Length: 232
Image 1 (cartoon, rainbow, N blue to C red):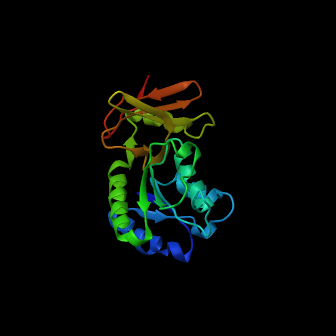
Image 2 (cartoon, one colour):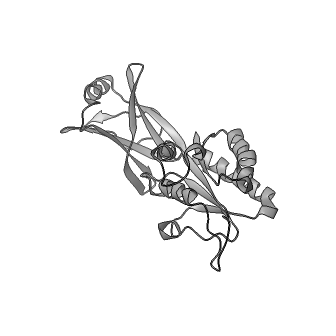
Image 3 (cartoon, rainbow, N blue to C red):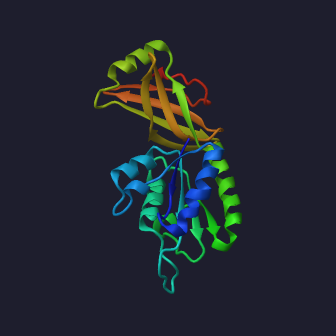
C-alpha cells in the first residue's frame, strides 16, 4: 500500500518525518512525498505520485505570520489534499490540522472527510490518533487484483488492449449504494489479464466493464475473489 504524506518541508515540521513516517511504515504503508520537487504549482511528478497512492495524509500546519482569521498553511499541502479529494475515484485522505490554522475552504469544507486536531504541546496524543487513522485506512483501502475469465474472453480482450478506444472501468456496490464507473488498470501478466482496482473496501462488490470499439465485456457484481468477466 502506498501512502502520500503532504507536509511542510521545514524544521518545525521535521517531526512528521521523524515520527509519522516510521509509524506509517510499521503499519505496512510505503511512504512517498513531494519533498524533492515541491514549490510552485503541483508538478506532474507529484500529481503522479498522488494518483498512484492508495491514501493520503496531509499536515496543514502553521506558516509564519497570522491574522485575525487564523493562520495560513503551506499552499502545496493544500494543493496535494485537493488533488486527492478531486481525483476520480476520490483517494481516501486524512487532514491533520494544527490549532489556529484556517480551514482549506471551498468544496473541502463541506466534504465528509476525517480530520485530526494537532497541538504542538499535545503531539503525543495526536500521534496516537494518526496511528489509529492510518491503521483504519490500511484496513479499508485496498488494491484488488482480479483475473479475466474465461480464457477465450481474456484472449479476445488481449487482442484489442492497445486500441485507442479501449477502456476498462469498475463500479462498486455496498448494499443499495453504487459508485462509479471509475477507470481501472489492466495488465497482461504471465499469459493472463489482471485488473487492478484501488480504493476497494472489504465489503464492496465490484463489477468490471471493458469496452473497445463497439464490443463490451461486462461482469456481474461479485465479491472480491477471482472475478469472471463475461461477454454480454
